[in-house]
Amino acid sequence: MLTFEVSAIDITDHVHFRQQPAVLIERGTSDVYVVLTRSLLSEEPCFSRVTTGDFVRIPIEAYQTAQDSIPFLVAAAIQKGTELYERLNQFYGSYDAPTPEHVCRLYIGNQIDSVDKKVTFYFGVAFLEI
Image (tube, rainbow, N blue to C red; front, side):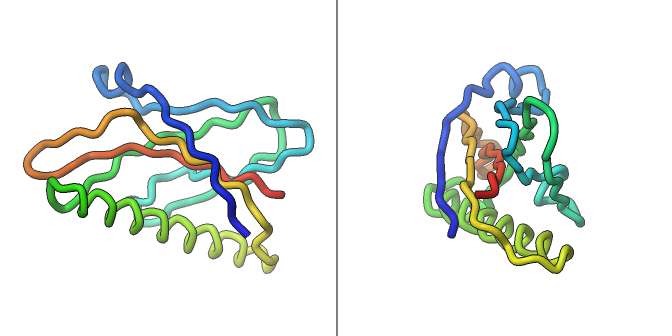
């Protein structure tokens, strides 16, 4: 089962200064997080299990739509979510282990940019194993 927690984050300064935004969240002593270490746009998106440390770093990535419209924004978000979930299942399959239940912590950037008839939106995600 997958449940969601969604948070909006301010990425204005990061976008302005062309820096990759990231979120740091506290990790409880027994918490295990799975985070993307490379963008879904890369040929080999990669996950990492975080089992140590006080904090988890979640990179916020930029993604673009095919056209500048709300339906294309929704479609792109659904597509990226589906890709993400498929990749997560592949990640667990590489361990020959069943995919555990997760809380999906989704961080949405507060900016949406429209350039050249395309929309850029920003999000990052961490999966907490439960």
